[in-house]
Amino acid sequence: MKGDGLAEAEIFEAHSKPWLIVRHEIFDVYQPLEVLPPLVDAEEFASFKTKKRKGEHLAGRAVLADLLFERGFEPTQLEVVRNEFRAPSLAWLQGSFQSRPLPGISIGHSMGHVVVALIEPGWWVGIDAEPLTRSISEKAFDQFCKGEELVMLKKRPQLARLLWTAKEAVQKAMHMGMALNPRGIIFENDIPIADFINNISIRNTKIQLKIMVRNDLQYGVAWRPADSSLGMAEDELLDVSREEMRGEEGDVSSDIGCVAGRD
Image 1: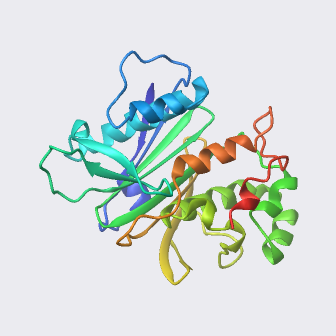
Image 2: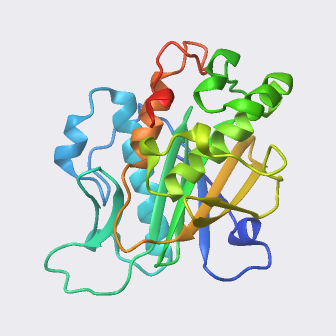
Image 3: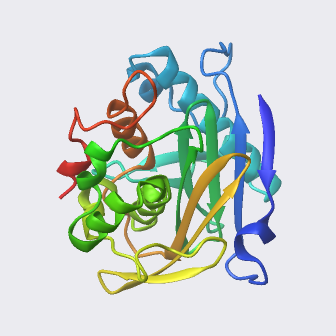
């Protein structure tokens, strides 16, 4: 595995609260591991049907464990838990006798890349990234845009990847994923401003969003104060749905309307 971390300052610039860390690593999804890394549930891992899916899961958990350790958390004392809607969060393992508040997490995968975001306890974060070599078919535009935004995107199709990652990040930060229709996420001035913290409002919730290009990836990172309860979807479910929409060349197609079903 090759690691390439993004510095905290690149995300927050002069801001210090809340702290937020983003890390990017390149991995071989078919590389076998003899021992499961921390934060991997053996039963859940066994349920994945493909070697690629298993490799992505292992890579994401391994990077997450590294980040947690660097922030002073012992990953072997933690687990990733989900509510009935499979929204992910961290929890102390039973018997660890710990009560320290835990950070929010978000994980994304794409074409051998894994990106992980870790944010200060009391906050939710969402991250998505796409290689600049990947394109989004115009046939899929109406699955995540509508109205004037869709008209604009058809005139400026080069912005599709940017809008896609920005909306995925917002969905994850809201902890709603598939339940939040991306067509209902609208930005001022048509698109978020790159390398700038954009303030947006979704369902009376203030969200901060930053989009940027680093390491030949288009990033979207969104964060917001956490609710008292978990959200309604999981990052990895979004990633799986997105992968199902891709053709053999890696382009997003409209053959499978997974995104359109996120009502």
